[in-house]
Amino acid sequence: MTKDVIINEKDNVGISLDGKEGIPAGHKFALKDIAQGEYVVKYGEIIGRATQNIAKGEWVHTHNVKSHLDENVAYSYDFHANVPQKTQLTFQGYKRAKGRAGIRNEIYIIPTVGCVNNVCIRLAKEAQALVQGSIDGIYALTHQFGCSQLGADNENIKKLLCAIALNPNATFVLFVGLGCENNGLDGIKESLAPYGRENIEYFNCQDVSDEHAYGMEILKKFIDKAKDLKREAVDLSQLCIGLKCGGSDGYSGLTANPLVGRISDRIVGAGGSAILTEVPEMFGAEQLLMNKCRNVQVFEKYKKMIEDFKAYYTTQGFPVYENPSPGNKKGGITTLEEKSLGCIEKAGSSEIVDVLAYGETLDSSESKGGVYALNAPGNDLIAATALAASGAQIVLFTTGRGTPFSTFVPTMKISTNDRLAGVKRGWIDFNAYGMDEDGLFNLLLQTVNGEYICKSEDVREIAFYKTGVTL
Image (tube, rainbow, N blue to C red; front, side, top):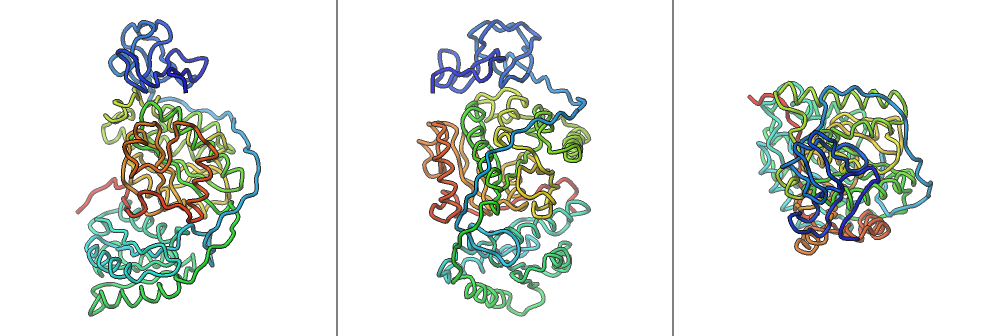
């Protein structure tokens, strides 16, 4: 890349890739004089207003620009999306009796309540020593909730845990309850009954004399059945990727996010799916996504999701532009509009086929294949958990600053810049700075086929979107 980049001919700011005197690397500089009150334009879109006169060549950032976000903007619908080139591809996956194929052969141990976390951890540790054959791992997906939550929070925790159990990567699932919690096994069984899954078992620790021995007998049975499973050729239409960014910087909207957008288009072109979330990081760019909605019905669902999330902010007494983070700003992102415009690049140019509620799976949607918008916040672990719970077998996570976390499915870290890729080799799976589309696509296929293991796959975590009272 050249040292300076201008993204769109309408822009009045450029990006200094390597940095120059008074302007850090990845930050913006004025392409011409910008008067106080004048719009600042990047990506061909307004990202804020100048709070003072800015001379040509001057650093453009939080000290002289503020958000232009209108919390009461009126939305319209003007469809504009591309149809990706159709292809037919396959991957090597684990076919399931019901649902899409998995890219991993794994066993999940899911506590209904945080009280039994230690039981699940001990079971996973002992059972892991028995892993053999094609089994990729046994994981305890612990959390601190499941009791003392009320209303929507209690329902969302149940919904999310059930959705996790339905992820295609889960060959077998063991739910471990305590026996007296709000989020009891009866409710989970009732929610999962319509799916007719025979790969899920349950028990309450209060109902058995030795919870460890009882759980190990179930896990040994799971291991005996899972160890002989083999990968088979599966159509790529069965693959779903989750799209997430975190620790974004000034390179995010230039390198990693557009590159992932191209990968998303290729997956959709092969009949597969991609899920975009982080609703607060759509603010300022939401109209562009609305115009990509397949029809008026999807547009109305998307608009309601945006308006409801804005109301969630304002009823709590916070402005919707309570973003970007300190790390984002240090990396060169000035306003929420700028962050959002870079964030949505991950969705590529394909149409949005449906909008998913938090905890809803894409398999429950009438649309099959395409880009989905998911209602979830921007927090890295909460959003990544929601993506995987909605059916993504893998999450593509772009980052300018780096993070070692992983949700409960493989979480591929894609660096926006050379520096991060160089200093955090233990975190980063792919460096997007060179914009090597075929390289990233091939690494994705290798990961899906089990030939490559993401750097963070030994970490498996989940987190919930919680909004209400805890007793």
